[in-house]
Length: 328
Picture 1 (cartoon, rainbow, N blue to C red):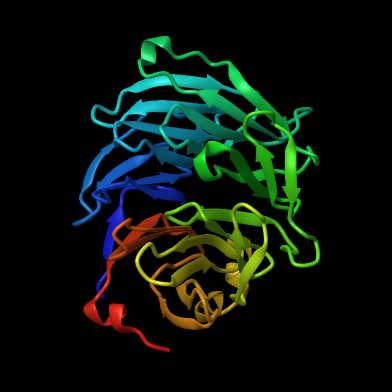
Picture 2: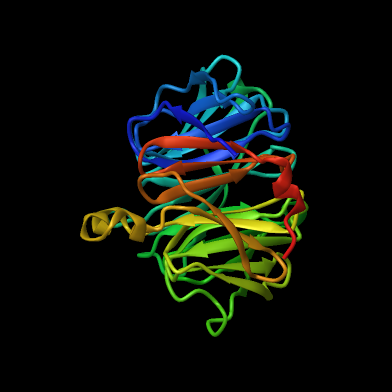
């Protein structure tokens, strides 16, 4: 399985996202410029210029016409995917950390970081059909119970009825998307013991996986917040993704970039590790990055995946036929 190396970013990758058809891959990095790639051959299609800080996250609409990005420049921006034009900018008083379109693309959830005297919060914005009609008002603002701690990820639950969030305070929360009421919190006994870095949903929204600096990833029921599985990695987990095709999960991470110089390069463990989703056993790994893996995404067809690293590269892997016959 020879990876395709995609070099378009000057700085570390932060996020990767495929569109629903799986023919386009969007990458975000700390270099201010989200980039669009062809997902089959890794050719760069174009960039979205306008941010003035690291871009932490992105999401693409179901019809692949709109992109939303969240950035450290304290804005979340809407873009026309075809032309690369900026359509609208939501301004906040603190960095926008996570963005996620709702089912139907009429709403978006955006999380903002604690900054100066501002506390972290989750904002729900209405997304207008016509960019001319777009307004910046929030439909709902959910303040974080522990406002000094960052919310690293918030996504929509099934049928847009709930919002699921997780971050530095290690607690997963389910909120009512209509009223803003806190419905559930993850049990401290079984929950993560350190910052939740990443959260990724299953294709059918029935369950989701979280990655944490506590060196584990955990699989949860999306409605009840019941812990289903735990995958032990041995290194901090920065990114998680689930195969839409097979019962596989992939975890990426590695020691913090600042600690890399203190150890042998092999000890950094900068590989994407595959686990059997049900049996929780490691089934293989894909090496290649020269630094921690910060972003992972499975193609919606389950036949390829990509990883983005601290080294500024996106590596696109098309699986060989023997991958589909792995037996434990």
